[in-house]
Image 1: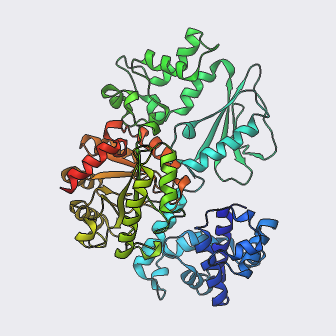
Image 2: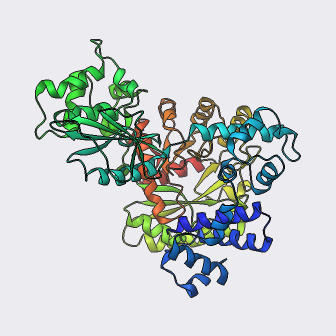
Image 3: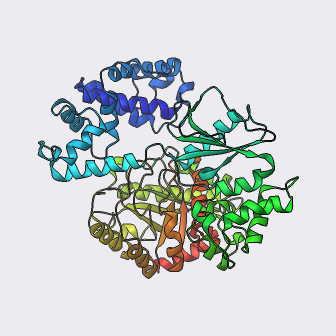
Length: 572
């Protein structure tokens, strides 16, 4: 079992123990263990009993439970709890604002044991009458339910890409030529269907394989549709004649709105795509990129990268820009918005900085949580001073062979009234400030927008972090007036973050064009809590390219010299 599997198992056990009124000490033992194990850097599955007991929050009992999970793949305590808990009750833990205590009331007092009954009770007003709930809670539950329903069967970009590769390897056992297409190739932030193209030469295949469950109703002779193993996401395998594979890959990669676009002659891109390769007889030895370049050339526009084929603004973008202007991983010179063990990170400041330097970057912006974020061990003022002293020492050490610098940042909580965490004299001690919302996420659009505007107008704010606080597939972002927020950033010279965590990808790529039109720079930040978290910037780059972000408008594409000059001017 992976570390995350172990932590998830322990967390769920703690929740169900509380749900079933088990011993409080036992609940606390599981809760504390989950909290501490989530921060553990090494491989838990590789540790023996004495080594496990050395981890903070893990006693002899919990060490035994971890060894049980590693050796058997499950936890007996959890299995016993699951056996007496309806599946629908467990699903209620997905609802924002519902913890074990409230779920216990819904289940034991109202007899609600599934999400469907919970929705009906909200819609008829029953929940608002229950002591401890009320109208606002009922409305919040209903909103959360509708959001979960809309996200059912979807995967985040990272999970979809991994699963697609696993399925691809399985399909290669049955097909000589098979490729990933659709939303995964387009690098969509969430994916509802995994699309594959399987080439055939003489006759249509009749595909069957272990682990693949066919949906007879939606499948056809040309398309296999169904599921793979226990995964809920839809799978489609499109059978394509081998000599049509290149242009069919183009067609099934693009959003249909991209394909509907018409050129000056009134011809749709789809029509051109279906005819170009075959008409020219070009298949042997032709690469996918070359084939797609030929399609766009015949259509009358330059090549458009797969990420941008969404049918939004890509045809206007390509008239004003060049593909080589787009931001890439190699464009990035530094990594901003990162956490260390000073707050809730898993690696020390020195480890984070050393690995950043090893990846070839010129600077690391450390932005641990501020003092109000007690849930994340936010930095008290004395701890800020301690960190700054360590940064000074590390900068001397790490710049010995080539220029490299740790920039003194902080992720300052935006408080309920829009003010920033810490007094001004402390804020002034940082090189830059990432201002982010982490609490009071239920404000209406007017209040949420007003809160952000006040934070943006604070002269110490450098970057607006994850602007809506969304968590893809699990939490909607708080509602904001995007234009007002972006306009305010433009007026105050504040950079907007594209949080590269695949859980967030916030700012949404659809607002990048407006930000660029208002001359607002964007920063692709990993929000890394461990060294490997830096690599999440690949997801951020994909989202940024989808929205048309150019290198010259990317904040952390500035060199060390340039960013120090920028921050120096801003402080003045």
